[in-house]
Image 1: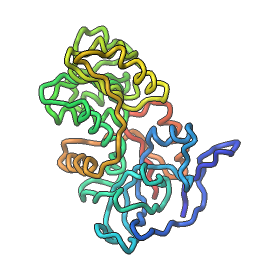
Image 2 (image 1 turned 120 degrees about the vertical axis):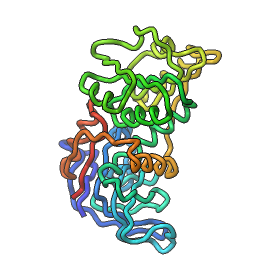
Image 3 (image 1 turned 120 degrees about the horizontal axis):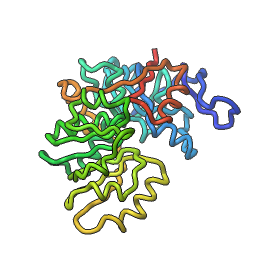
Image 4 (image 1 turned 60 degrees about the vertical axis):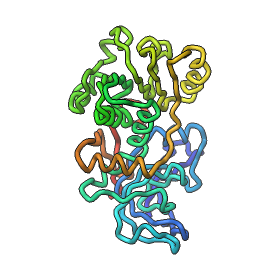
Length: 311
């Protein structure tokens, strides 16, 4: 099969298209022919930290068709269309085929395309878990910083689904998308700052944000909650060390460590199937241009998700 192999020692491009052995599923695994996958910050951050999959193939989000099943597999059959997050089972999505534990997958709704399905697992589940961790309630005022990216576009729609008043903070290029997603208010950080609005919010999602913790505190209601979603290692350490000093009493600062969840993934796919949530896809690349797709995501200016079409 063809796969994107990571070579740490390469003097040139570290992600290259190569021939690789087609995997064989073990007794608890399914073999999936991958139709589409998507790029996440987890891919390039894992590379940077030296956390390399055993197969040297990155890619967590996959959508495809089951071609073979292990002898102990009970829930899936050859021909089933599935979606999964492979981040907890060794990655491997940047390839024509991947073998992974059946527990990593859910059935893909028939009306949801492979592209749309592949955009969901990491970003959609992270957005959902961030809102749940922040104890989102109907009628709240929610501020989403970093609303234009993969997690942010899901978070805006899910927050609206929870019947809240949503303010989206994004770049100029994402303002129209935020209006399309029915954000109640949009703040273009190139021209204005949420800290100068004088508004206070019940829940703030800080998605890979570069704002000071004091900025979030200033915009937080007395009983409010800030959830730090992702970000660099230095940003996460800073929030953990300084958060306890800044956020006292009834105010809360939380760091989200998103976990793979087929239950949460299924919930979001059902919302997509019903038209409540629409995955925003920025760009599409063929498999042999995966390195370019990763570089584009790494720049931090993607409008929604970036998809790799395998075929």
